[in-house]
Image 1 (tube, rainbow, N blue to C red):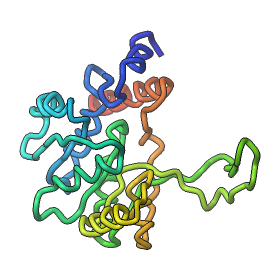
Image 2: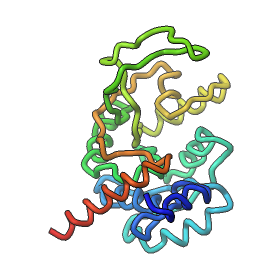
Image 3: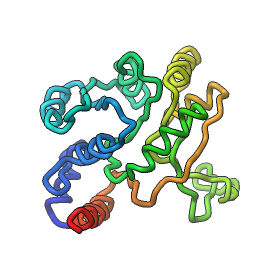
Length: 224
């Protein structure tokens, strides 16, 4: 990874780092723009970035609506703000990390179809290594790997189910690490579909090097 990539990781929010001269967030948005079932896109960002992001994405949408929404103090508040801004008549909502720019469009479509049928679905990948449960740096148990899935996004839900899950979590003072956890807390089933090895979350410097490889591969594929 070159100096420019390392410097980007030192400048702040990962979703605004550049990949091929375009922000990682924009790459992620483009995947959802390419999904036929997606009617509108809400991009939840810190309040101070709303106008900048709106301007940067204005030319991307075409016939589809893209709006920027101010986030909250944590992921749960931010997604709640986005959910509150969903247009009337939308029955299915997909929550996606803005730093996952390589989610395959066909998986977005499949997850939306599955959520319409079952109510809640996430993408996930099987654990490929042995998983240990630890406490204070001491192993307590070796978890059965065949029962472990590493969660990805999008996580897709019927809107009314996700609304109820957020309301219930607020009443209980429950803070989940993802939306599926809120639905689980509601004692509702969440289904898992196999995700993609390419659906990486760019959070560390080494991830950007892999992202560049995937980006170059996608560019070559579109030229053939």
